[in-house]
Image 1 (cartoon, one colour):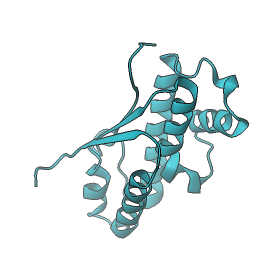
Image 2 (tube, one colour; image 1 turned 45 degrees about the vertical axis):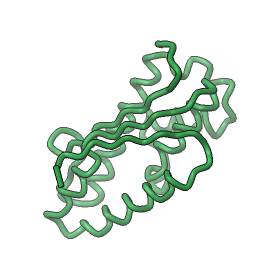
Image 3 (cartoon, helix red, strand yellow; image 1 turned 90 degrees about the vertical axis):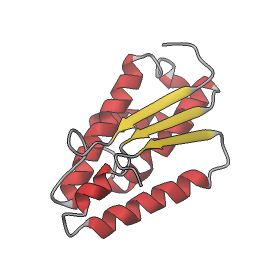
Image 4 (cartoon, one colour; image 1 turned 60 degrees about the vertical axis):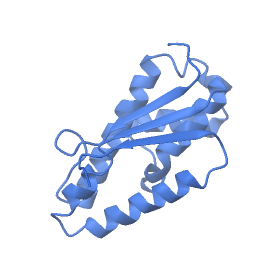
Length: 145
């Protein structure tokens, strides 16, 4: 694990490669797989070596994220919850980098579940900006507007 001033969570939501689906359920399952891979990468990089220092809820979050067994309603906030875990363990601000954040919405526009994806995205963004702790978000769009 590198020593730096920040911990970083990086998720790539490129629909062509990772997060897409012809139904909302398929999209959600692919999102779970992508986030699980992010957590496994963090674990392999040594970010969870002191997992036993976390409250049980944080330990379960990491384990359930890897196993993709979080309850469905928890997945929309899993990145935010992971920022709390990383901040607790490392006492550093957390950067969340989301590549191609709009790809799931662009892909969903082809299907009848588009409005659900928009609502999920707006809830995530509202929640992330209303937090009182030090979390930095960066998102790279697949489109230029």
